[in-house]
Image (tube, rainbow, N blue to C red; front, side):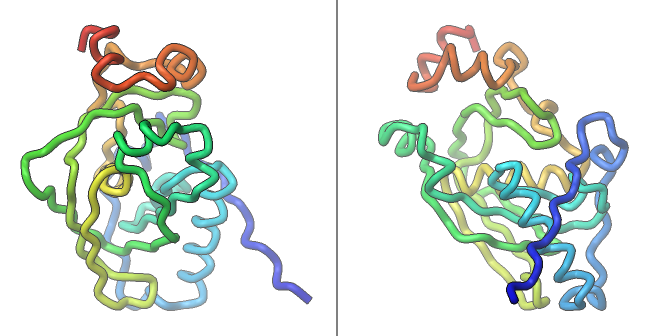
Length: 201
């Protein structure tokens, strides 16, 4: 008999205090326990069900410095090859990152639309570093080091922000804020340089 699938958790929405407070370090004695494994499995299930490419523990009401991320081929199905290249978007397997420390690499920046599972139904242009390094622990407590560019670097920055009480709306180009439907209808398939020209940003 197959084991039961992890249950999906409700995602906390903007306005909840847990999204605006710095999260606490995950205690070393918690890592690797059955409770911790259940938490990470439920976070992954919740991220996939949404569907999303990342989820931080505060987004399910747990104020700990922990996030999960994954980008799957089916989530890119609506993007053209050109859009994928422009964003630097490639699929990658699920990762669990505990107590991360993030550092920007170099001066290069890129601006693209971002959404958030905790700001449901909206998107906006956000400038992020093009490359990052993240040091932390994996779900067994072993040291973890990630160096990423493009879309994965953006996801890492977005999720790391959640651990510090920051939402993408704090960083967005405010003139670009739109419903996801409007953003898709108006700008899908257009290069970001053209989108910025249209919006005057």
